Length: 80
Image (cartoon, rainbow, N blue to C red; front, top):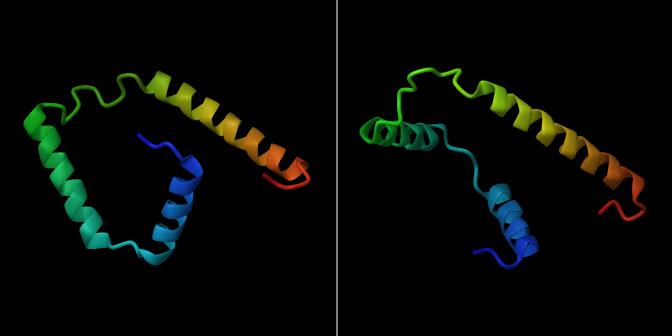
């Protein structure tokens, strides 16, 4: 369990700035995850659009919260 979110965020930022994306590594990971999904019977989806309404609602809420956070950061003197 993560106890210090700020420390984790700093680690992620430092790691991502040094680690360059590797297309073939990412593709291999995706293919292995797809195979596992097939073995578990979770893929392929019987109806790919099943539950899309819920996903759209979540995306709208997420975008609204992100927009408010950006606006709040611009309005605060410290920008935090």
